[in-house]
Image (tube, rainbow, N blue to C red; front, side, top):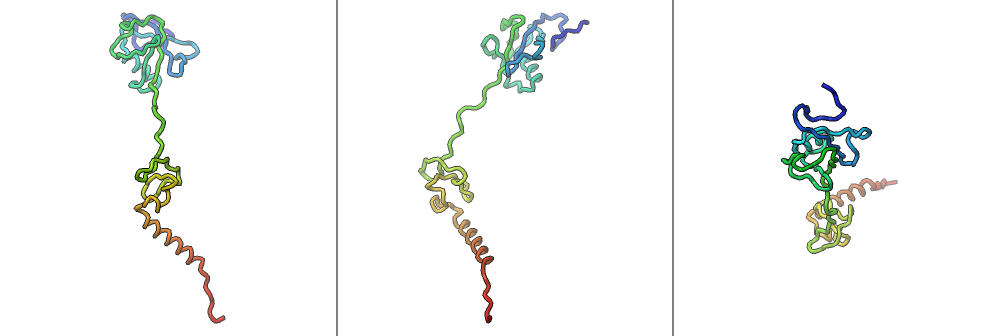
Length: 172
């Protein structure tokens, strides 16, 4: 048995095999310097071919798409011969584009206000709301944590005043 330079997914004893070239997602040909073709049977289904390529490139097989002559090869049960892909054809691997609309702007949570919330300074740590410049203060948006906030700030101020208190010595 003679060893060849091509990559083979199955032994090619009795089946009609064909060589195809695969360009990966970045556009480079597999085995970049030598462009070794992929030798597979012409009865190989698209799902088998995409699974083979997904394993080879560590890509999810469900996301991998194959393109030939500008058309997406979509039906997974079709074979290369039924799609009339010629010998030495180049198939391109493609991935779906993720994304869509830009993130939604955060709006003020105060009743009917539709202004944009101020970043960082508009975030209330007591009610976890986001507020614009007009409603960012606790009194302005009637925060449920307002009493807790007042108690905490009162205790902080009392501690600070007690630590700074001067003691007068009597009878000197």
